Length: 176
Image (tube, rainbow, N blue to C red; front, side):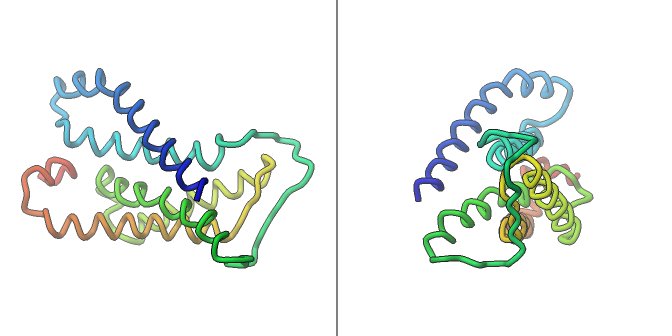
């Protein structure tokens, strides 16, 4: 559980820092007519991508000449349930915001298959890159990351159905 707590703590710290740094941009773009709600969508997507890159690539040292390359192509080969909770739940949680904010920001990704395809390409690219920088590449990570993005899209879909007639929601997703 320590790893999950570390990810959540780091996530909250980064979101607060990025939000504070974004305040001058918020006021500047507000003057240009971009609503603060719409900007919230951009900020959410930016924070999601930043956290994904940090947690998957920058969290550990990078070496382009690793001693070994680790590749797991056997899905869900766990030694115990605790390993699943510690290693895979954070992957799911990490991609939920991406699946939620992507269709908010990009109207073209409001179709499920587009969000799923883009999320798959992102997670596959990360795992491919990790193989060459001394990190492990794992099919489970691709599956759990994609599952997280699908859950995020599901949350967007439900929220969109509930609030589709609300003015504030339409400003957020720029549906007017």
